[in-house]
Length: 102
Image 1 (tube, one colour):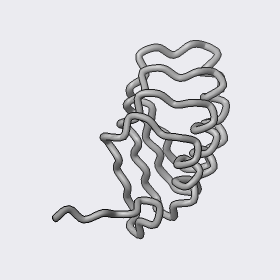
Image 2: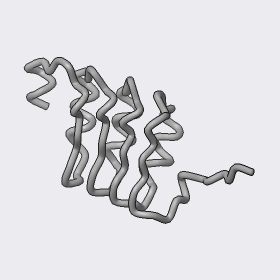
Image 3: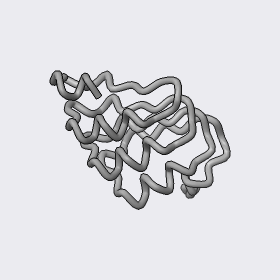
């Protein structure tokens, strides 16, 4: 029998959610309150401005979005508010000057 885990109340330091390709603003807001230190959302293939805004408020240390191949200027502005130590976007295939400035 499979065990169900409520990710929003996960008490560990690391959370790697690789098979989630889309995230609602509602769930991003809930994840932003998670108390861990390492959040890997590299399964996401797109990132709305609303989701970026919520996740940028997360108080952890390392945030990964390696499944993204593009990032809007507006999304970059929101992610720039992340105060952790490490933000990883290794999947980007193109980086415009405007996104890089953010």
